[in-house]
Length: 449
Image (cartoon, rainbow, N blue to C red; front, top):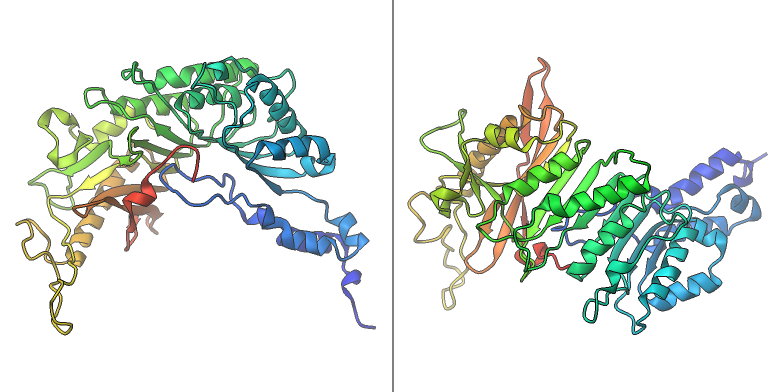
């Protein structure tokens, strides 16, 4: 007798269903660092094939329970419909949600807040929440957002991944203090700090400590065991020490395994460099020596020199010993220029060869891209080994390279990974092809794309 699909056991049918639910293929967290302006991975159609499979017969529906749904809310009308018509089973099956509601015309934000928190409380299986925009901003009239409070019932009891990035700077701070304490099991966090122009000298620590105090108060003085942190620091004047912010972050979350810190301009939201590792002559490989400068790398004034070496910087920062992946937008700067390829010139003959490089390059320009990148890989390998001396658990890291083309501030991003040889010797594997990112891609505007 031939076998049919219905001869499969329930566990096998359940396994097939799990493969058809594409939510299981999505990483937790699904969010990325602030400079990565990719589209959100939270899409309701990830369960399309799973629902089609469940529709085949009653047995499959009974075996393959609904779960891992994605919910995207872009209007207040959706919130009202979900509260009025959304079934309890549907809301309980939502695993990931993204909220991006542009300002509503309603002015009673207390009433809006009450409805919104009620909806969140009904999503009892919610594990990831992305908050891009919320309709509670009233700062153009009066700072009512700061008066909102959490309801007496839990709203994010199972959330382990949380991203907060509203358009309004003042709301960003208010929402940080509202939503982070509401997530007792949070492991992955993405949020930004905002600062008013009247207080440009406040430290990162001053902004984060109230959030941590509120979280501890709401969660019986437990310790937040955060694993992943993507944080956007506010821009600060040159006169203010920028490296201290990094130390504040490291001290507040000593259990981190993945740390991504970036800083952007408040005016045009472009990525800013913070620390530049500048090759110090006359040292040559393998004894690379790097000076650590604030902000502007080799063009910085000598008083911008903040540390004499990478080990000195790492020791001062007190980076978490649990770190496995690290990206602090650290820039590598060599005493060698990357050769630039040039464009065809208007009016030249089609058959004429293009010049390989800039016809008037700086004297210290490499003879080829290959020569330059080979030296860059040696520098990155040496810098990574120096960092590993301070953080032995680190598995992967990133360095940035200035790719300014005369018009746009583009960047190369180099990836390195730790490898262990047969004799237990640690080696560094640097990617052969750095990823080039355009200025437009790296521009981070609050509130999502």
